[in-house]
Length: 114
Length: 116
Image 1 (cartoon, rainbow over the protein chains, first blue to last red):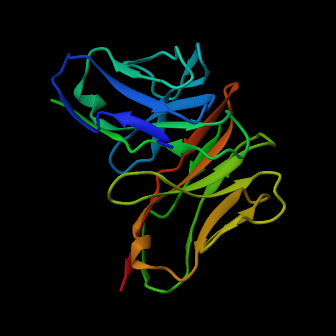
Image 2 (tube, rainbow over the protein chains, first blue to last red):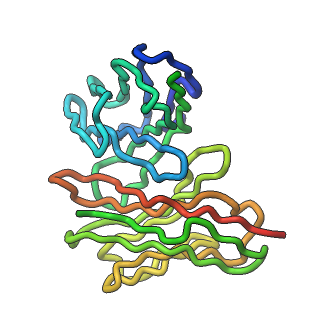
């Protein structure tokens, strides 16, 4: 049981480059989400999905794009990277959006934009 | 608006002592859930404990317990008999209906240091 798998773990980008952070879960979870964590701060919600084909914006969506074509995968795309997007990114999933279901986190992706 | 407040940026505790990490929340919803996560220096988010808004008893998980005071909107984490391995960042989070959708909102965290 792999849980939530994020790749890559570390990435350095130049300003203006694009990239995709991959997230996959093998628990048949409906709800998946992306967070960013800046130094000394808690996690802030970027985008989330309540099922395949359904996505919506979170607290800090600008500069990011998502899609959910399958239940398992929820990639996060940076269209034109900016230094302000230097952060640690976490993908999370849970069986459903609400209730007591445990929320599982990936191990994080450290992104530096120079 | 839903909000989580952790007022203790850092705490220092002697090994084997109990420690309480404060968390207050603000929500107008009746149904919500409260979580505590531990983030060690390696960076991963480790689930510790969950409390539902309708749960009448305080949640417990081993050395962790959640002191849930609904009327005061507080959900403090209590760690009994602290260990050196408890040194980490601790985040309180609330899942509830925010702008029409279920979302998880985090506090800014408390850095706990256990001294030998």
